[in-house]
Image (tube, rainbow, N blue to C red):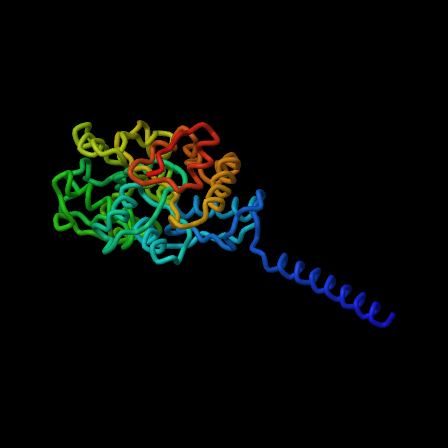
Length: 331
């Protein structure tokens, strides 16, 4: 009898131990998504300066991930495209907002990147519109009038700066032909107000919050590009013809012809397929909420998935798109 009681007690202790181990394992398991597959405990998304669309949209994505997937996510203040891609390459952030042309440079390890960055596309965001801004009473009326002027060209590490170097060289100028000022959006607004710059060349969504802010004290004007100037860019797959719509700013009474570069959300290429799938699904299925964050969210559509060229999509993103009938090459 004593032996049987000892055996019974041993069995009870084993069952209790197993139960406690199961509880401990559940408590230590990473936060799961609605599908129970998301393996990441945190997702940091590189944006840019807080007054720019990159950061605003990164914050919107983080909010969706927090609320819909139950994962701690935060938008990071960074220098923009170039820095975001370098941070992804160094495994310091999981995702980031970037220009497609800069992402291609990162993949190839050229220009601002001293080595290739392993990065993949997550979803299309919006076309970033090139906007050449000056004050209403400025004598600047064409691109060539920028020569010799103090021009805000973007902060160090930004995609804006990288693209502006291309814009200047393509249209017959260079950084040596102007007096470049390496300013963020917020700094550019202040510089216009204190008279320390003559103009700014930026590629960002319209309306840009910092320009709207500037308009509250200083009427502005936008310098149009000619069809010939625009054509020098649109030969590349990641540039498209665009206009700054007259309704974007109160200073405008007509659309301004220009061009745009596509913006995409990218991630570390070795993130799990399930993790990226769940993020893409959550963002696409909460598009209406994102439109309240910024009007550019209207471009996050399945129709625009193929607008991102030259940067391979992550397998998790491809899985979601295939479910929706969108075939994307897994190159």
